[in-house]
Amino acid sequence: MDKEMLFSPAAIAARVKELGQTISADYQGRELLLVGILNGAFIFAADLARQITVPLKVDFVRAASYGQGSSTSGRVRLSKDVELPLAGRHVLLVEDIVDSGLTLARLRDLFLAREVASLRVCALIDKQQRRLVEVPVDYPGFLVERGFLVGYGLDYAEQYRQYPAIYRVREERLAK
Ligand code: IMP
Ligand code: MG
Image (cartoon, rainbow, N blue to C red; front, side, top):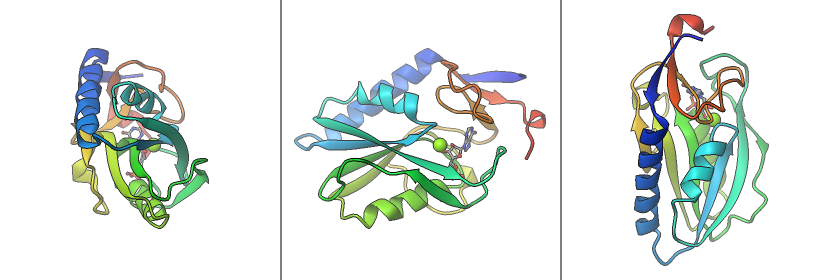
């Protein structure tokens, strides 16, 4: 596959460590419920959790956009819910990448309806300029302006998630 490296494993590790420190400071004295969004965030959530020093529980949801390819269809379905109760919990949603914002906006609504004590979002990659709906990203890892990314959990057609670095794929390779 024709690709260029955007973030090396060392750059990712350094940024994840910083995020963990910031989050740990913000949640001093509270217990956090880290909710990773499958599948893309599985690696990021695992690394981030290990950089957080406040008491922590971990759970996962799986959100899937209908359809395949490299751009969102705009319809989001929750195909796996959390197992732990959310009411009264300080929830941190952990996402791999926020693009149109549709996935995150839908998840936020679902979570807010369950009487969480607080809800914040940490996303490793924030493609701010591509938002179709406004949604807050409290802890953005890296801002990226353009392109389709793979690696460190991010896939193209379910492949390349295992790459330790993050790459931008040459766009002409992708079916839109
Ligand atoms: P959104 O709903 O458009 O914000 O898209 C969010 C989801 O689309 C993310 O959780 C990713 O799974 C996927 N996605 C968006 N951009 C990329 C990318 O550049 N590479 C891989 N997956 C992406
Ligand atoms: Mg995802």
